[in-house]
Length: 528
Image 1 (cartoon, rainbow, N blue to C red):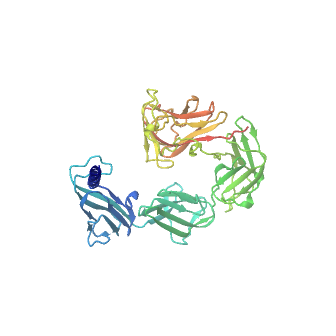
Image 2: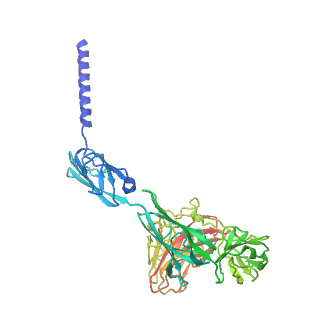
Image 3: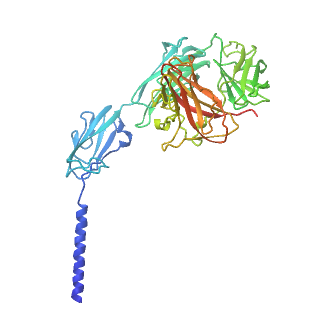
């Protein structure tokens, strides 16, 4: 029995040794697999001039390697030339431009070329090119021009400090910029102008000056990564002087929700000249009644000197009201002593309201089309002529963001589309019975053809109201080559969840071409 026990012990030891040897043999089987990383791989390998990138070859089964960097514009840290055989190298780049860094690898056996490759290629050698972008410093250049009365670009302004280029109050200036170093963000800061800040600025922008005085200018061009910015400051860039031209009322708007009205004039008004008794307000309700509210006060706005604030004392303003403001010539004048002229029934056009689609918690409707694909707005099977159209999403024109829907309605054709998610389910938005809503969008006509009664109508389903009006109608009077807003007042027959059903019709012997952007839905306040 003792001998048997010894034999069993010997057999166990031999098996254990063989097992260990087998495990070691398995661990020694090294695949040939290419894996290359860089320290800036998540940022398109883009760096500032004078910066560096670390390059790493963490491939398995490499027999030999050779990194090659561009000559004269780069340096490999720790190397005497522009090549290295190390697995990790640091490259410095001293000249702006776009450059290739190459890696030649020879593997011990046939190589898997990518991390997710299932099979190796028939070969042991691979060449890899990594593109490096080296950006120079951000440098901005700006210009400013007067704008002629016909809208054309006029004389260039002097951008030296304290130049105080004279500008008549209520006139416009055209600002433009160019920039080196690939900046992404552009901001004008313009005290005294309207608007006083222009963010995400286009290469050319027009601003209006209404406030008397001398005003500075600031322009900032910047990028986030790699970081860089250039700021231009011009002291006393412009001097706004008094005008003898008539002052105009440019806009009537809801200043404070339901309680006050804003009157926006073409230039600053004299606070001492304001008399509330020279103004009247008339409200025409949706039911046909006419109200004449008492005006509690009229004053110049604290921050915008070209805006008068009309405060009501015994009445509220609702979205479904038609509000009209009148002024009988009295003492009102501009700060440069030009008398205001008569105002008769100027209509309040801009109510305070919130686009429900801008709230991500309200609905998944992609109202600005930034994430939309053609599949999200499919044709509904109505048959001819409602399938005679072409649709795409374009970066060429956008009212906001970067994308818009581009549509072409074939001659005598049309469109009917729904709105679905990636799984084909309707994208819905909640509605309430008993309220008026404003439903609209922005449009940019490229070619109207010869419009007769071409139109778009914004329907919804399942509780469709087939009686909604055109929104918009394309006619000979429709703007071409510019964005315009169209809307319709709608109501819903039940509380529930509805989904868009957009219908277009081209009663036209030519193709109707236009962009659409920024769908809107406003829940309107209604007079009880």
